[in-house]
Length: 496
Image (cartoon, rainbow, N blue to C red; front, side, top):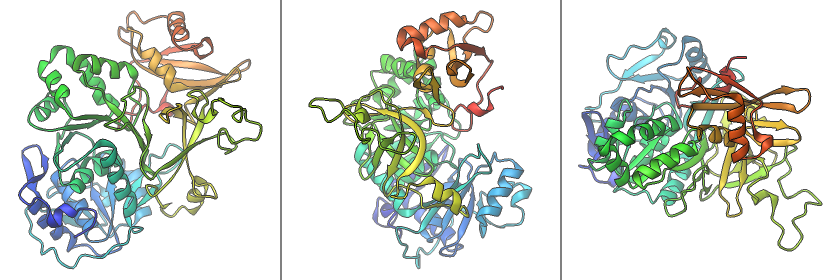
């Protein structure tokens, strides 16, 4: 079949590959059902998949990939306008969905194929694909305009999944549990295609809960993938849930991604279970770039080191690599290269086989995203420790604050605020200041709305942990922070 999934052709046919709730498929059953989908698809076309958290979504995606076509995963929560844009831009020939699933009007013009997970295809005649052929077209969130379709080639999937297998010692013996949506890279590529490439199994929770995580990990699952919101809920539940403590303590690997996991939650989970959550860093356009390794130090607040095959550098605002400017005082014997000093902030640029090839129908945006020599401009700001570990400090557009001549990352201030016992959630932004250039603003959800910690108290709390110039000058209190489907705080949606 496809080199993406060797286990479908010659793997453990009677072993369970996928389980969603009470429904499951073995590798032999998945191969047959995916083959039936593939027989309805033509090589080289684009096929939309109504990406509910279901067996049908997984079977549909695998079937399209086996046929040599590209998958366009659709978010079932998309509004009509956004969905209409995605469908007009990607022009899929078909839409796959679970039988009985009601599709919105925006998808009404498409030919529909219901995915039958019990179908039995012949499994013959599938295309011989090249590693540069499109595998997925995943639409990015449209914070500065309509969503853009990032075209991910097959080599990007193979590169990322094999690099993670190396970093995480991921094998066919692993059973992954998660409750992530399947229209994002995290849940679909890592959470479904990852186990299938290894010949292992995935158990999807449908809806995330601490009880469900405990049940699956205590019933033989070895790995848990989640986003910070999920791990925060687990940290909150641990003190009163001995079954959850047992489950997390016995897991081989706990992985958080899609946003930074606050250090406070890292420490609470480690204190209760003796296990540390590891983080990795990636984007829709790059898949995975870095990770803490299973055999490395699980250092809170970092996303580890570059994965095999990935080149990573930090650059100045003008694009000059940090430490490469003439006159940089790194030539002196024993001097610390500022590119690895743990303090100097720069934008991350990456290069490697894990990258997307283009934004669909957007040559202008594609050209702007890359340097002339092929480095992708991530827009993420970071510092790098002397041993190569990367610490993300935020997005260039929303999380880099220039105040009083300093470049300050919002992330470390948010972590410091979350260590205050009166703070439930926190976000940090900058706003114009006539004297400082920008002043630091903290958006805080207090534990007790009737008695929130005062502005001066929070400022002193941050200054005592970081440095005086990193203290918030303004504190604004909210009932909740705006978040997207993956738990990321949407800072552009904060009140103006």
